[in-house]
Image (cartoon, rainbow, N blue to C red; front, side):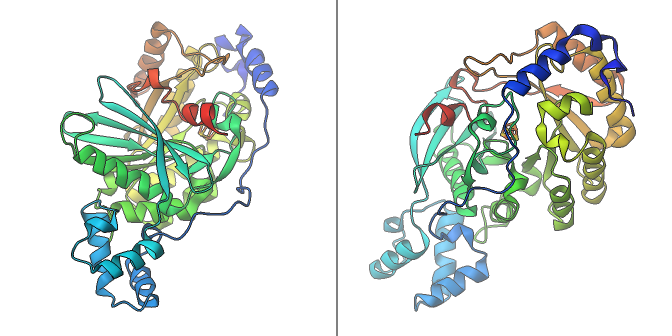
Length: 394
Ligand code: SF4
């Protein structure tokens, strides 16, 4: 399919040239392999139930201690050994040292939306920063977690991408963001006590570039307590900019999580600069992989589209997006999630005006494809991925 700028009337607007110039100014290399930095100490949440029993046995303790520890950590969301009073004090100390080292500590908490949105900046053992955002709704809560410190995907409009990749987060560091969010929601930090029902991997990083740790984290999050946190796989969303082999690997895992593809434009010409990984895997290849995922899991794929003023918001792009999704994914297997861009301070990238956004939505829907605008919770606390960490990383 032709995806060139001549595909529609807005192509001659000059916006493509301006975009390419902006992106070229900000061009960074793609980084798939994280720099070698010391990973955090081993943690209970890194381990499967069998591995936990083996780790406890290595400490000279009976296997049931692993199950007791798991019940506290995953079932009661308790990570302070001092509160585990059914364990003898000496055992508590040994288990804490071996399996419950503190992995992430909160350095900044910001809230907005009348307290219903809460952003946490975490510091890891080596000083690197990552962030998560907890959002409360009337009967549930969602947490958006980071999978890497920084990101190597170099999207020019993204604060995290501009900072580069510091390192992968461990499974334990990812699960800890979720456990602490679940405990905070239960304890009423958002107002009323709420159950954490949804986890979205849309914070800092490209989740599928940290594949094994992310998949292990998904297992810990979704397995029933005490093996895991017991959050329904249907409530978990893993996003990607389109790492095709990793999408296929995820398809084969048999996890019923939602796949979200950050497409941001339907044409290769613009996507090559807007989402640089497109130089590796083109739009058609990414959509084909998404189709395989949807066919195998029966789950609708979410197409994420950050709407950027005069960059990717033209009517012809909406038409092309709707048509491509209908033809390549089928309308029944896809949903478009439009995200009004949250501009970073000093950035040339800006959100589209409301009438442009509304026309975009209408055109995608006219193609028979479901399309909604994501709520922009947390805008005033810089909740776009990476902004807080980018401001504070030493
Ligand atoms: S938009 Fe996502 S994939 Fe792109 S640089 Fe930012 S964090 Fe990475």
